[in-house]
Image (cartoon, rainbow, N blue to C red):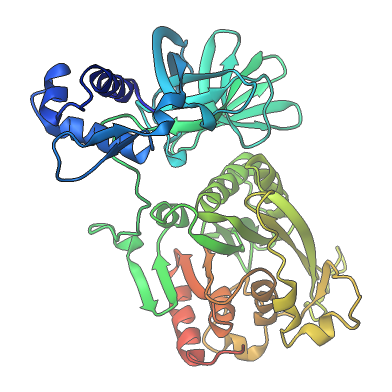
Length: 481
């Protein structure tokens, strides 16, 4: 796809070739477009060569020729601007851009819009870029759309339809979604096909995690080959990770339930009366918390990557709603049954002897993550699958952590190693990267390391990270498969 200036340069080269049989020099092209330096023209020529419409031989002044693709360009109207931020009225302008015909869908009306704002930066759509839009009136969940609100305000967002509402989601963790109920008018005007980078905009590079010099809470707390721990808030740390870089995430997120006189919320222990629900935050704040960390996880997961979320009724329902709102594809809910759960001696309610695990993947159309052959080779397979044709079951009977798993310290919601081993073997391969944004004592990391996977854990509590380090150093070098 060519920008307006690239199309002008290409037309000028074509005109010179037809008139004199030779291509213009860089200096001649720069004079034609009143540019003081040929370096800008060189950038345009390089872009045209990368897009396959121009060929040049290095070391020769006029060694420029047009490729066969240059004759199959079509003009697409650049209709105006579209907001990637708060909705604004679209401004119509009389411009066109050139697009190779073979890159356009057949029998479809296509137009272009210039982006204003930064709400889509996590999708690599920046202020000043041009989006190529296929005109249509419907969209699927997760698609980037041009939406017209109340017949007057146009905006560029990701589209999600829920029960009784439509959510227009920005791709920027610092911006809130637009929620439209039934009383609001919304029209889909098109679906984004591609993005044309603004000419002077730097190319987007996947960021590497860089430790902030003045923020000790985000520094690497412990680092060994294939095993790394961060002390800090999971949202802040995950925001520094590359997009599409993680194979699997296991998360046991905090919730407002008191545990021995304390409530675990957002990685912090808050004193409350024993046995009472802390209502200080409320459902909305809990849901917002889960929505934010799940959105951060979705950004870093690979398209075929999977997520496991563990919880009880205090948090799992909020997580389930947020997963669907963010466009995850839910594969299973697993009931983890604890045969040796501590009994409820008060007899006022049933003994809590199970937790729920939700297994989801980032993209529905991606390769299915179920790792049947790898699981079959696991040493727990004989107990889990008695006969070759037995179906996989969604109720797992696994006891609570064994005493030796707690010898370096006890986390209030510590998971058994056998549970995490099953999850790791079911959905990853050797060498994959597994992340736990609420690592605690890092049972996820121990299972990952023992089975040849890489691990990154994040937690706000140094005492639990210290337990994680002791556990890792105790088993370091001992691999099961």
